Structure formats: C-alpha cells, structure tokens
Image 1 (spheres, rainbow, N blue to C red):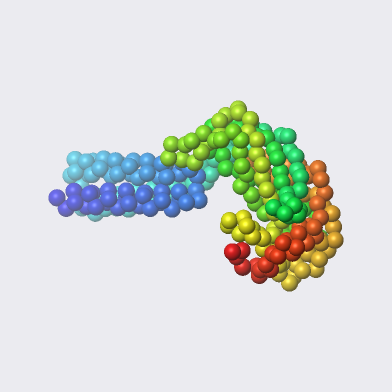
Image 2 (tube, rainbow, N blue to C red):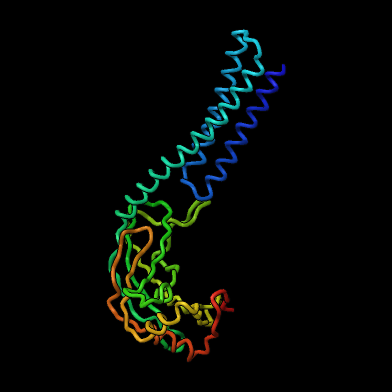
Amino acid sequence: MIARMLGILLSLLLLSLGWVLAVLGSVHGPALFPYFVMGYAVAAVAILWAAYIFVRSRGYRHQTLLFGACGVVLAGALVGASLLSWGALGEWEMARQERVAGATQVFNLRDEPLLSATGNPIGVRLHYSMRFPNSDYFWHTPSLRAEQDFGASIWADGGFAEPTATPPLLPGKNTAPRYEAGKEYEFTADILPYFLVRSRDGAKLCLLEPPAHYRAGFERLMGQSIRYKVSINGTKFEAVTQNTYRPKAFYESAVKEGAEKLVVAGRCE
C-alpha cells in the first residue's frame, strides 16, 4: 500500500517536472521542445509503474526504497533527456529556418524618400515583393543600416518597421495570419532613422538625442549623404538603396515640424 501511494506521488512529481520544463522551454526554446518533454514525462511514468510491477513480482526486500530510488533516477533521466533534446531540436530548427530563409524570394526592391504630411523628407520608404515557400506563419521586418556609421553606431541606421502587405494574408485558426505559398506579395515599409520617433497615433515627431559618447560621430553623420544596406530578417536577402539620403535633411525636417527633443529613455507622446 505504501509503495502504491509512493508510485502515485512520484507519478505526479514526474508529470509536474515535465510540465515545468516544457513551460520554461516554450518561452525561448524550439517549438517542438514542450511536446518532447511531456512525451518523456509520460514515458517516465510508464517505466515507473513497470518497475513497480517488476519489484513486486520479484518479492525484493525494501521494495519501497527501491521504488523510490527508481523514481529519483527517472526524474534525473527526464531532466537529462530534456537538456539533450533542447540542443538537438534547436539545431534542427535552425537548419529548417535556414532552408526556409534560402527559399524565400525577395525581389523588385525600390526605395524613395518618405515624406511627412507637409511634404518634408523624414525617412525612407521601401517597396518590395516576396514569395514564400510554404504557408506557415512568417514574421519578417525590413531594416536599414548605413554603409558607414561614422562613429555614430545605431544612430546612423534606420529603425524597424512593420510593413503593409498586398494582397491580405490568410486568416489563421487561433494563430497569426499566414502567407499563401507561392503567391507574390507586395510590401511597403516606412522606415524612420533611429534618431526620429513617431508618436503612437503618428501625428507627432520626436528627436532622440544620442548619448554624449556618440555625439561626435553623430555630427559627422549629419554632414554625409549615405546609402543604406537593406536586409529583411527571416530571409537571406541583402541589397543597397538605389538612392542616397542625407540624415541631416531628416533631422532638419523634424525640427521644422516642431519635433520635441528627447533623452534616450524618453517617449514620444
């Protein structure tokens, strides 16, 4: 009776341990990791009760102690198998993402100045087309990096932007919208330089002043005309803008429109 109650307790502990590992791993781990871990936990419980039947049938002395030791070993094996699977599944998922990235087509890239409502240049507008190899959810954002930062670091780059897509995406069942495999999609992305911030409603511009140790590089940047390197995460696409842009023109446009100057941690409201 004691061994049976111990078995129930150990079963609950193994399943709880599996659940905790699955939840922790689901945050930043491979997508399949939680399913593997819970599979290991169920297998551990099955082995535990097989051990219970074996120990009982053999009539060993100290059956409860042997059964408890078996549970501890299985808990350790569950943790070990989960850690090994984390690495293997992570490598498999990375290889899969690389294959998808290589098969995702990006083409017809065009760029032009992004104008404010009053016609002042405040950033870069990208137009591009994409074709996806499958209909899985595909999150991507374009970004701009200056070919040379002149010591201004990220202050020379463009921020991330959520592009708009045509035609509309496929509605997902309890998931994010999805792209249709093989279909050509047109995207438009409006990208501000890192030192320009829009309010949530898009009605206001703010200037994000660089820290003191980037100030000299930022001043050098203001005297340049630059091309941006274009990349789209989730793909292997890289290109350079056709047009050159003057960061100082973006800065002066914001000043002309009454942009508020912010410290690094400020918010544009």
